[in-house]
Length: 75
Image (cartoon, rainbow, N blue to C red; front, side, top):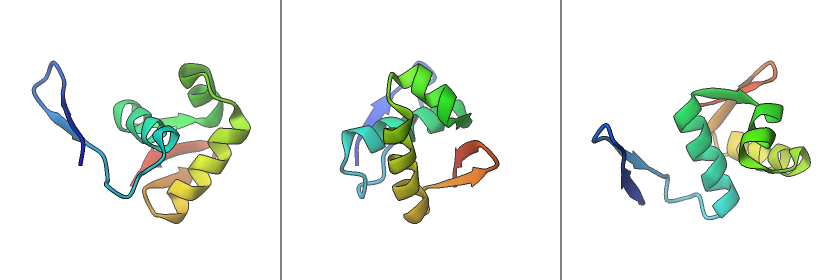
């Protein structure tokens, strides 16, 4: 498990099942921002929407994220 410290002295952890650097990036983005649309993630992360849809599908399948309308958030 990867842990980092933020200015608030809280540790962020990543699930060990996440192997892909891009999946980790999306997970951390949602952890930081609570919820976001694919468009918001694409703009903020500099990723193509098609890639994000694929990553989010995998994260949903593994029950790390949920989709409500056009927004995604962590479970």
